[in-house]
Amino acid sequence: MTGQSETEARFRAACKGDLWSIRTLLAEAEGFLRKQGFPQDRIDDLKLVLAEAMTNIARHGYSGQTGEISLSLHVVDDGLLCELVDTGIAFDPSGLGHSAPEPAQVREGGYGWFIIRTMSQSLCYAREKGRNKLSFRFPRHSAA
Image (tube, rainbow, N blue to C red):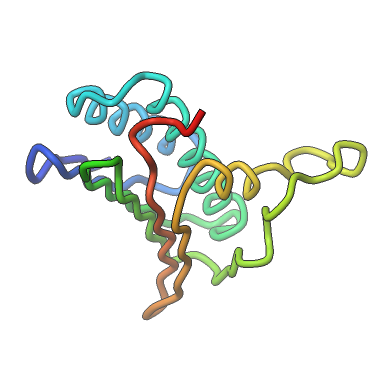
């Protein structure tokens, strides 16, 4: 696990693509966001979005193999610019999560991409030079 704040407004860290390491990285990101004055409810919401995305990378992108997940957070006036990068299997989420799944049809999981899309803004996925990049904006304050 490597984590650092390059400036007061940036956080970059990387972890192994396993659930324990993801949890540790999320705790580091939470500490950074607290220092930046983010409200705890927004930190909790962001951690949910990141946990969903990073868990998908670990379970599906690396599919039982080891790999690394990099997280970058950049504080801007109205919130955060967030980016996750991994070298797992290419995956295009463009068709997922545009509406909530039917509860009767959902087994374990199934809500991840809906949560990510609903709680973030300007979601963008790209595959470049063998790396998956998922980026999005996250507002400092909830719309509600």
